[in-house]
Length: 429
Image 1 (cartoon, rainbow, N blue to C red):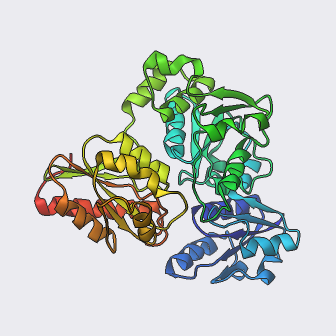
Image 2: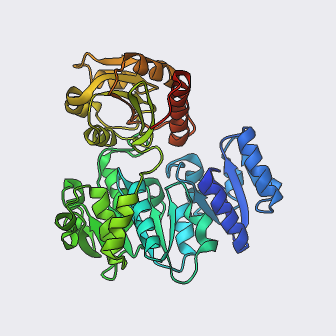
Image 3: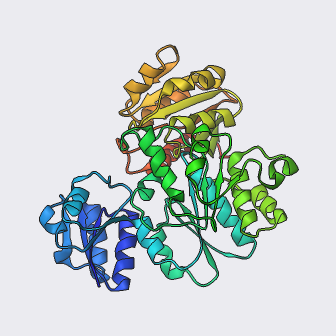
């Protein structure tokens, strides 16, 4: 039995706490927030005998509290150079991520997906394909369903399909996927990582423990990813050309090809894969059609938190667009969007902390405007759009300046759109 301190009380922290308590460890929790929501979660954990009320610290991370533990588990939102982690390392207390904790208690094969864009879509598709084949797929990880929370559901014959972020991979030690995937890599999270080089090195940790008995699927069109090849010990496959699936089914979508490649290796029939793709409706907050109001379509792409994901969204949509961008800046050059904006966008509306940066990077354009919040942005967009056009929320930034997370940002956007629809007396498509 160990004394384990958990840093951060979001979904991953709560799941880790419950898993550790079930294992018989003594749980300590330190959380920088001290608000009604945090206290409500802690009250429930106390009630469920997950943690004792004397083993909780809120409002700060103190060295004395952390020194009482034998191990530290960090939530994805906690940086590895943050004070609590430094406290632990100064005392030689091992520090791992929630992903590593869950993997250490998992006895079945793991498929892990990472990349800058498309992780959630590919993770979801792989899981759906496996399930359609009749396999017991556990879809979890950075997708919003912590790996730690699924350990008790895993049984013999299960396959874990986990989305893995750079934050989670930063804290692994033994994590060793049976199959790993790196979809793409571009500038991201530079508000947390020192530079692009560090970000790439953390993504590369997904294959750090893989060997010749494992497989990694790579994007052979991504220059950064191809530069990693000499460091890989696992069997390498390129999902763009795997088994000729792209030509056979005339599929160019890289997310679809990545999912099909992994599913094929895992034993899924091609007919099953095509059935899943045919019925796939997408995921919430990723190019999600919300409503049509007065002939104007509203698209929620709140999950687009990078410049490259905004570029992908603009290339994926037809017709004229009003683009709502902004939030908390996390790196990247918005000027790379000039081409797609000139081609398709009537008006760019910038909000949040990144608004000045967006205007600066797009200073050569005359159609960039600023608004104070999401409500003002939606009203501005709607009042200036015409029938047949689209209003796209694709922020290219994280949400933490104005919202709890990208899900809340997307929900607020959808509520504003639906209120316009209600006022106009028009139903969604």
